[in-house]
Image (cartoon, rainbow, N blue to C red; front, side, top):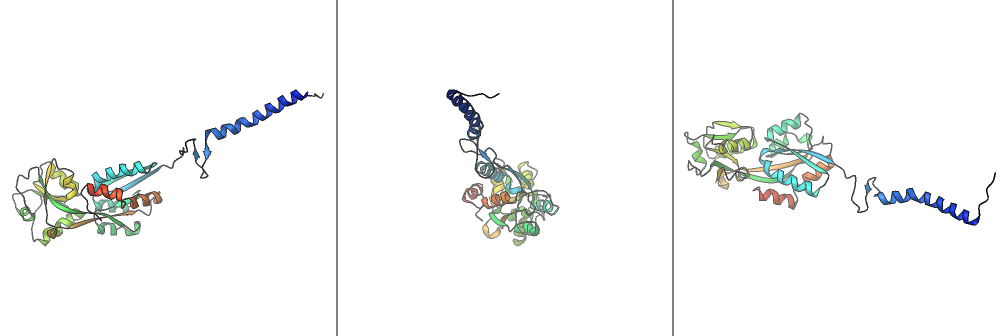
Length: 272
């Protein structure tokens, strides 16, 4: 049976059909738009699918405080990137890299340590320098004034182990001045040396200037003249086995930017 619509009926039917077709289109245009890269954006233009990247950075123990500050600054200006730092003596970090530990970037406290894993890293860039000081108990109770005072057998001196960059630098400057020191202990990283002095388990120890600066309420720092000192260099590189190579390379490059350099120098590090 056929049905004949009046003109008014035909107009009503057409309106209903048009409305039905427009509803889904309106829903699509209201909720989100495609930015051409596959991610959706809301009306305000913010991405609802920003990439999330987690980077693991192996860093020398002497960078503990400053890298926490630097990491927070980097995450703030690079939304979606989360940094996790693993701090230890450079020799320990190098061993981890050689064993294939999952990480994205490496920063050591000397170029020799970095050179040991050159086949596992991109070309390193020196991002900062540092110098040694003599850390003593607060108020310097034993009145230590120079390197030669460390030879006093009555003093409990603690040094970083010979395989640690801080230990190598310590040996270098003591040997150059022909000073013999018999440490009560040799620690696996420079922060352990600082801790011994902080706790009163040692009368003095050789640490980086930045380490002593991080504990001014517990230790005093006796400066060592430049002509008797050693300069520590901090190279940074991306690990070739990184699963986030582009993001890791971006972070390593950022460490040389004015923003990062200000953070490092405010903490007492010297320009690279």
